[in-house]
Amino acid sequence: MLAIRDRVRYVETDMMAVAHHSNYLHWFEMGRVAYLRACGVLMLDLLHEDIVTPITEVKVKYRNSLLCDDEYEVQTTLSEFNRAKLDFTYKVIRLRDGAVAVEGFTRNMFTNGQGKILRLPPKWFEKIDAAFKAEQDRAVK
Amino acid sequence: MLAIRDRVRYVETDMMAVAHHSNYLHWFEMGRVAYLRACGVLMLDLLHEDIVTPITEVKVKYRNSLLCDDEYEVQTTLSEFNRAKLDFTYKVIRLRDGAVAVEGFTRNMFTNGQGKILRLPPKWFEKIDAAFKAEQDRAVK
Amino acid sequence: MLAIRDRVRYVETDMMAVAHHSNYLHWFEMGRVAYLRACGVLMLDLLHEDIVTPITEVKVKYRNSLLCDDEYEVQTTLSEFNRAKLDFTYKVIRLRDGAVAVEGFTRNMFTNGQGKILRLPPKWFEKIDAAFKAEQDRAVK
Amino acid sequence: MLAIRDRVRYVETDMMAVAHHSNYLHWFEMGRVAYLRACGVLMLDLLHEDIVTPITEVKVKYRNSLLCDDEYEVQTTLSEFNRAKLDFTYKVIRLRDGAVAVEGFTRNMFTNGQGKILRLPPKWFEKIDAAFKAEQDRAVK
Image 1 (cartoon, helix red, strand yellow):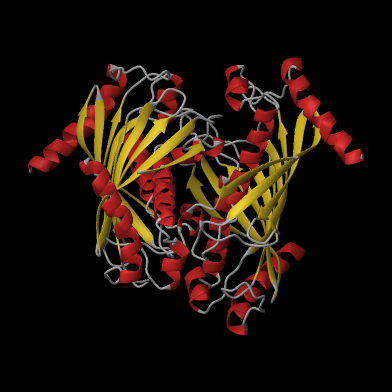
Image 2: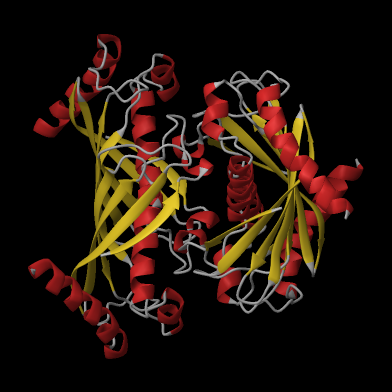
């Protein structure tokens, strides 16, 4: 699990005066990108090798809302991984009271820039797999 | 089912050169708002009566991507409705070839501006319920 | 001048319950893309020839605000054009009362994908120049 | 001058593979909100007293582009302030090489929730004015 923190931007609020529900997909993505960066995998490096990671599935349950300027933590866990897909689960925590704001799930696959499915090359696979095995070890304990 | 059409905006693309996956939540919302407008229910009128409609759940399956300027149709269906919740399903169609771009589901509940759950007042309930019954009749046939 | 129409999306509102000021840059872009499309110039076609059109300057004056679902018209005028730059001016009209919501200006230049400045090739120059000359003729009369 | 730092989000890139030009308005706003927070003025506290701060003018010059994951610093300076308006200037610095990415200017005025112009109440005026005087002192030296 990797945790990142940020604040709700003014522009992210809507006329209900809470963070609009679509922003959580941006924050999941920030968690995912940070997780992969911590593995040594940068989105730009993948792109330069013509590897892209389209999303194929998203699920979100919304529990509590966030206000403008609210600080939140995105907790990102790699829950399933192989050469064909990357599954993450997320918890967004509202830091002023520790409430769970949302819980989410995303699945990415690997394709080239033309959308042709590919298997993640070993060089990248190994970096992410090390983190995945560490996650699995923690989950077992 | 209500269909609306639009084009992918330049700003909606990302560095993979396709519409970013979070935009589909915006497009579902456009479909939902148009659906309710067709029932005679405007978001601003609800807000003026201190009724807000927070999202509690979203699910999306991504099938095919859209490019900048691609025309799409959002097909919005009211799949479940009572005084406590509003469920919609969505199909986004890529118009240049008729491919399904994404399929989605959302659930809204009703609360006041302070987040207290409420049951939708009869005045609004009846407008939406007429559309819901018509959907159900079509589904049966 | 080319006019396009759209409605304020729910997600485009902020906690002041009006369209957030950054959306106007998206709407100017929609006007600009529609203007160039009407000239026979598609952003994707340019991109395929490694021509990109970065913005170098934006100015906006905000006069009146727009609410959720408000219909607006973006009036886009090509005000200056040569092989090195593309200047547009914009008016966004609030259709319920004809009020000017904002007035704006943008400048684009032409570069390749690596950011090297280039002069627009004749094939594309001529398409846009025909529209520019027609604008100039209208302005004179 | 107040400096804040962040990274370009994946969703903020566009099909040119750089941060879309509209995001800078979001980042200016983050700088502005942080500046006011440092003065002891929170946007939510203003809203609770029915004070809103609509933007009336924006100017941006774009110098250098930012890539996905690029770290940047927003340098926000209060350049003019009285009971009727709030002017800020901004520099966004690309941290990997210190290049200026953009320079900007915004003007906010003060109104109530119905758009009626008001003069900022002394309680808030004094907090911001202390920061403004400190800026002026620094500028003189």
